[in-house]
Image (tube, rainbow, N blue to C red):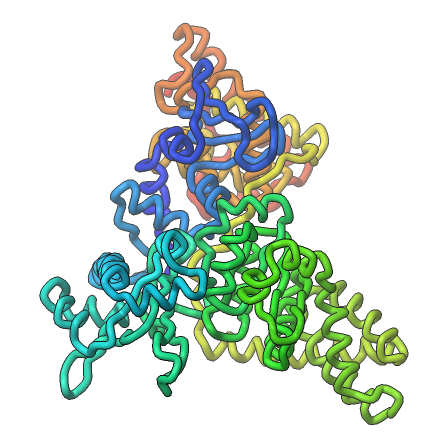
Amino acid sequence: MGRVARESVEEVRRANDIVDVVNAYVPLQKRGSQFWVNCPFHDEKTPSFTVSPTRQTYKCFGCSEYGNVIDFVMKYEKLDFREALEKLADRGGVTLQFEGGRGPSKEERSVRARALDMMDWAQRGFVSNLARNEDAQTYLEARGLGGEVAERWGLGYAPDEYHRQSDAALKKFDEDTILATGLCKKNERGWYDFFRGRITFPIRDPRGRIVGFGARLLDPEAKAQKYVNSAEGLLFHKSKLLYGVDTLAQSQRLKETRRVLLMEGYTDVIAAHEAGFDNAVAPLGTALTREQVSLAHRYGDGVTLVLDGDAAGLNAAERGVNVVLEMGADAKVVVLPEGKDPYDMLRNDGPEAFGKALDGARDAFDFKLDQIRSRHDLSRPVEAEKALRELADMIGRAESPSLRELYARRASTALNVREGAVIRAVEAEHVKHSELAARSAQSAQAWDDEPERPAVAKVTEAPGGARAAHERDVLRALFEHPRVVGSAEDVLAPECFSMAGLRELYREMLNAWDEHGELVPGALLSNLQHEARLELDRVLEHLRIPGNLGANAGELDVEARDEEERRLIQELHRLANSAQKNGTAQNLEELRQKRGVKTATDHKTRPNH
């Protein structure tokens, strides 16, 4: 899927007033021209979180979080840029457009929307079937999953019939939509239901939309696979999803511990949440993937793998540990007593015993070392070398050089091998894995969905000294007198600014004026990288006027306004000349000629615009 077009991002932002959106999450109180509330991103007793309807931005003066409406939804709901954009596009009735024709076609987007509707339709049917089936209800009640628990988690039942759902679906949906959901299949004999005779578990994406189902056999004697998931398709990608992920944004325990609990199964997650451990999620019946770890990491600072104490659980734990260590995640491991899984322990021993088990979580690398020591007799050189190769292969996959070195030092001590030998082995493996990754990337013809968006910027001490401070004052004046922006590039090129963040910010200001005839900080933020976002906040910090920063913004006395605009243009000239003299803007004339822009020396000051 391709990049969302820049114009489409701006259309989404315009369709979603930041005050309305934020107010839907946290109730705002108006004070003067601004809206205030206790910050939703950190604990505080008095409101320091403000939302500006004119700037279309938010900012917390306590923790320094700030951004536009897209940033807020990303931060609050722990969504990535594309997910937040899609959510706001749905809210604002905007159809996203993509660059280069690489995005989904209009027909594909239509099928996706209809498929999501069918998922909701199927969920209502499964829940209704459960209410009519005593065996399914008895099964859930016996496992502590009936009644209100089933209702809270949307548990349902798929009857043990081949055609009930498919017959009903064909009367309501087209065949492309039905196939996209994976709920019904088609072979040479016709349509049939995929889920039959099973308890159903709706699987939601981070936005809370049902994109698939997990299903467990009701008949324990049946020879079919006990658990099945929806097939991979338009909506469902099990390697990128976690069961229960839609609950994490509101998890109270996650706010306290900053750790996500990764368990094995659906019932483990449900039991954990019902016992107060509402930071639990689970992979969808597969080994833990890098995408799932990245998804969990959106919500917390670290992950804790909570796994069964049998051989299968230990093997699953080690596979998961390999993934989190390669990614450099802050990871811990809890291996429960043999014969118990989280569901059993919580139900039989209670939340207190389970909490104590969590308190005894071990560092993931220590767990990995113990597993290797259990497989190899390190007193024998041949076995020690095997252990070293195994560790070097895992450590060599880590992306961070400093992390590879730290792991190597720990491995050296554990294996009683010289540190230099371990580091050499690790780096050799890293080179090998890097070369393989590069070849894979070339053959895959990868296309990034979106440029990586920076985390919502936090303000730090302004760098750059006196010159950068003066340049910020100039940009601040342009916000206060936005009509000057229309002629600013004729006088001052972005290359004249001394710092990359300021250059990027100024360039986006020029683009915004050319495209929309206004300067709205919230619109600029959608296109700025980290340093430029910081610079925008520094510029706005002492802005003199809070009003609409458009063509008619800040109407003063006409003569006073014109005089200030003349002085500002003169200041733009001085900044451009200074940049040329001190070498800040190297090859400035060449750059201007390429763009067809007049130089500062041949441009005449215009008092009126």
